[in-house]
Length: 374
Figure 1 (cartoon, rainbow, N blue to C red):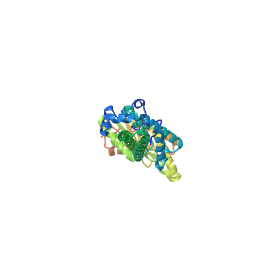
Figure 2 (cartoon, rainbow, N blue to C red):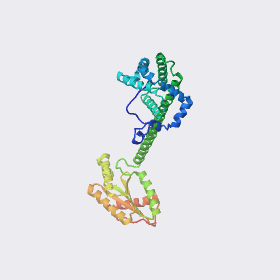
Figure 3 (cartoon, rainbow, N blue to C red):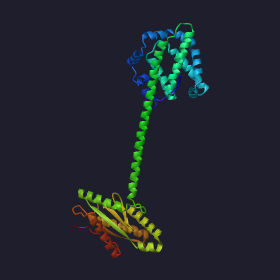
Figure 4 (tube, rainbow, N blue to C red):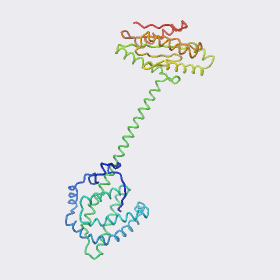
């Protein structure tokens, strides 16, 4: 069964490029003149055989049509082959290709050009899905039909042994392309698996990062939560101490929030908290970070900020909330500052800002924060 087609994937399974289009199939497979001769030697296909086959060139042209007709009568009687052939138009193309194939068997020259033609045949058959068992059996049928018709011409005995060696020679190259095609499919499948694995790892990493971020966010306000706050304080204190820098903490608590929850309900209270979270975000600028400490308490970490700058920030934040809510909701704010020479541990740092906040709450108005000393 011989087939032809106009365009194929390259032997490595990729689309043709300007580089591999310029290479013959033999070159792509690394098949050299030395390799071709070695294959002939292994099969015992010598110069006498080639000369004998070439001597039947004229006879092959006389009987080729009868050979092709009988061959396809046989082939189309096999259901699997009939399905592969498909329609009448395809059958006509196959008959024409088979005619050329039979004639080239008796051309007497079996070098590189001949090898490339056999590689193309193998490539096409592999591409259209002809299984090896069908190809081998079809080649055997073809051999029998050729010998039969050659004998019937009255030209004496057919070149039986020489033809068998040549067809075995052909079969080697056909199966070279089959094997290469399978290897290419395996490589493509491996590449796809590696790419899928990488994309899966990326998705897992992205989702893990998203989950980790969500675990550190307050659902209501979108600010960092208490866990994120303590993690950030620990890291910032360590970084600031190492750099001999400054770090300030702002601790804010809503005044009158319980009354709003009691009189207007928790939905109204949640809206207040969300609005305060938004206002804090508007005042905070990178590299400052804001957190909902819990309930109606908020914290802001101010990097590279001393006590005076922290006090100015507290005033701005208080004014922002005042402008939004008037006397309905106000902030009590406390600050604590460390560095560059004096530092506190986490608990003492938070406690200092918290104490300042309670002093402010008791005075009913913002007071100027002071730096913490140890």
